[in-house]
Length: 399
Image (cartoon, rainbow, N blue to C red; front, side, top):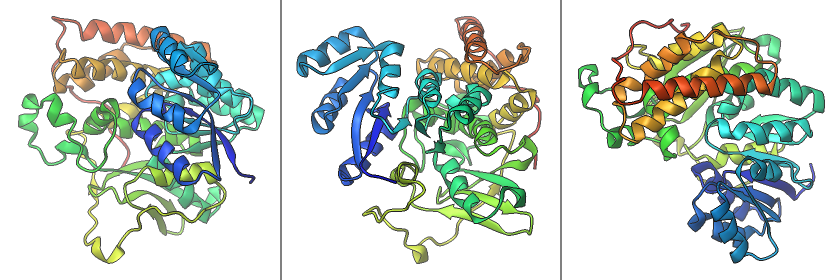
């Protein structure tokens, strides 16, 4: 591999984006940021532009783009979907780091993969919504899709220990979020602040809420299917509160290989951006002797009904995962806006998914159409007067 690698950074001001910029700053000889996108947080974006001097920048809205142009005359600045696609397809970009939250990250990732660019993917929704189409496009163009999510990065590393035919099962770990031990009968009293208080990771609000419901783990199961070509029955989830074991591979001979590291997103970002090499870093090391007891617990489906619901969507196939994701994005936004209680988050998704008849998801148009329809239905369910009760029975996840 030759360095420096030219990077297009999608989502520069989010939690993953800020960690990526920290990596770039620590290794200026290895990475050059040629383009970057952000939402509306110009207070964080403007200093990043000044520090890394990309040639193309995109923001969410025209007004913000106008301000960036005033601050940096001569800089090429876009906005909206076209702007972020321009960032991802920058002709000099070797690798696109996708850290945009939600399905909004799909169009730029799709266009980058079609061009054969390496996609370092922190946005799990890209493969949840359009895994079949994206991976087919990557195969056609020769693009590599490398995981940045800590769990999938862990699996990617552990899978290097053997041949695909020797894999018995992939096991994703989950912290359990802030409600792992909270009595179920108190869930009616959960506040937005409670749900945002993640015990081990510092993330953006949407991802943090998904971690509380464990919808994020359900989405990761779907993502793992496409990244590693493993069927649902060979994908498992266990609770690991310390977030030190990031995931594990169980082999046919009974061996289990786990990847462990501090819960710092700079580790998987650096791994994806330098793969297949490993480089010396100043990142913090684990003090193995001080770890003490590492806990592992089975998944409680009553506490986390989002996980079996995601398995049900994966088994249904086609556009069902896109619908699951779209409905969840609407429900999470409604919860953060105070429109629905915590207990209604999963029921909204369950109701939308239950009313959807899955169709083939072989094209981007098909999944985006399903996404739009699901958002309309979910918006109806979170509107005033449409409150839902806590979910009933959903399909169980495999052991």
